[in-house]
Image (cartoon, rainbow, N blue to C red):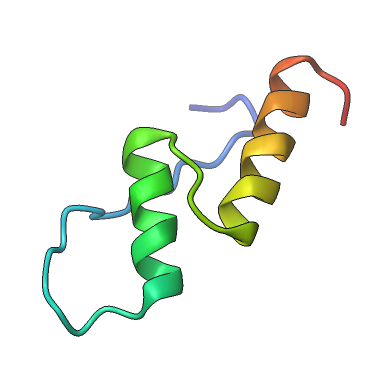
Length: 55
């Protein structure tokens, strides 16, 4: 894809007990779009602005 974009793929389906809360919240946000902590709330706002082309 020669359009200047980069694609990043994450395996966000990990369900083990040893995952830190911050990573678990991030994976949940990536997988569902539901923000559940301060970082994912900020990411959600940034994504909304990007969709509106305001960044």
